[in-house]
Image (cartoon, rainbow, N blue to C red):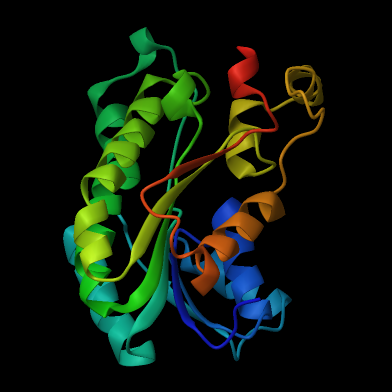
Length: 247
């Protein structure tokens, strides 16, 4: 259990990011949740009675100016933070021939540029001994899932993380990627909209169920514990055994 820490979750209005924010807040942490959809963040806070533990911030992760402004606001509200989680991400299932440059640019802007902006802007706020967790995707390994634009952006996140492990480690901060596949979320509903498509998907997962947001949040919380701090520069694949069965 982690309690009493200052946590920043970027991309915390829905899905995995929302679950991470709720779990940290319910354990007594001070959680700043930043998202482009601040209405959903405020709704989440109200519905769960967490006004004392969660602060809402509006941010466009694809904009350096917006992320830089967020850093100033988080500093004013919380001061130093101990945990940064980057969970912002978008996708749209398209074949290569269907992807135009606008879709490619927007996907990279949120999934990869936003990751760089966030860690660059927030790095001075993160205490030595703190943690950074990036929500990646198993699509970066398989190339399947959200399409070439999505897989490419998430593959970039892997490379980015591994390129800065020395910088982070020298500052006493561990950084890792959690790479989910087929987690129950709004994004999964976009990729697999029908009950039939989800049932077919389950048959490809050796553990015979979809992942749950809590499966991811529990690992994220563990990586941010002091006794997990030696886990550094790793990609943790959470896929129910699917990837290496060739599915």
